[in-house]
Amino acid sequence: MNAVRGRFAARTVRVKAPGKINVSLDVGPLRADGYHSVASVYLAVSLYEEVAATSTDTGDITVSISPASTLNLDGVDIPLDERNLAYKAAAIMADVSEHSTGVHLEITKRVPVAGGMGGGSADAAATLLACDALWNSGLSRDELAHLAAELGADVPFSLLGGTAVGLGLGDELSPALVKAQTDWVLVAADYGLPTPEVYRTLDRLRAAEEAVVGEPTAVDPLILQALRGGDADALSRVLVNDLQRASIELAPGLRDTLGLGESLGAIAGIVSGSGPTVALLAHSPAAAEGLAEDLRHHGLEALAVHGPVHGARIISDTLL
Image (cartoon, rainbow, N blue to C red; front, side, top):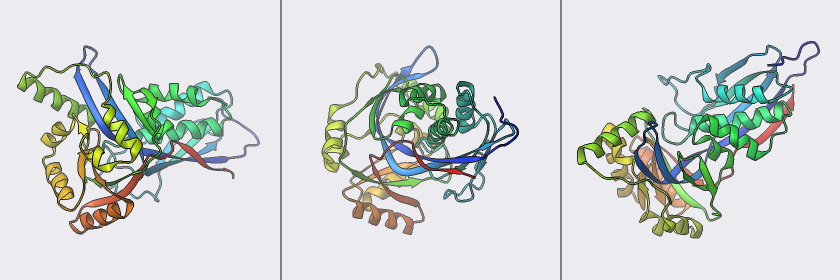
């Protein structure tokens, strides 16, 4: 890394990137390489992570969590070293940038940690874009997307935003033209579910059933049709998540959350990705706000959101 010495002008680039929900998630059998092929529809929603990347003359990458974070992070172990996805994103950018400096990353956490919504991936996507601007790397969005794919399947989507079909490991993205808004209530849990454990549980459940599972190669076109039309009722009939039963096996209380949401007026509910965040579908923004308030009265942490929203975007660029 080329640390800048002498006269050094610090600069901060702040980027926000969205969390996501999987409107559908079909999971194939365990492959020889230890992974699973998927066919999924990703929807970026209006719950954002923010990363403020500030250049330093130390030559080092450092990470901190902003006190402005809205998550209750008590007891949550977020690594702030090279295990952190944002750190890894900065390290990759430093390798490909001619004028890299040290950088401090301050992350404002809003997306549930280990919640199946890609919060860490959003941090990585935001960091890629922030460091690209900070160091004048001049990479195209496609080039940033290739780097994002090295960091994990959800990172390219957080960079892209909107709605997309994900195949392969979820990183083979095809943008879907969806302009109509759908409204959701996210119910966060006060615990996380490690994604690898959820996949292992699904494999175990399938093995016990001796289920024959094929490789997923496409998503249900009815899902994209419902999203394009903003038809929440039609969408409610085609929501699917193969990981949901594994998540419920590990965290049985999720079944109660789904049931409560539907009893309070949600059209349908689904565990997002590997969980444990639950996404409840509503008819309108007002209905989502009302449902979230009712759930909070039951002691749950609930937030009304909508999608699709844009991907990672620079929101400020300041010389210090």
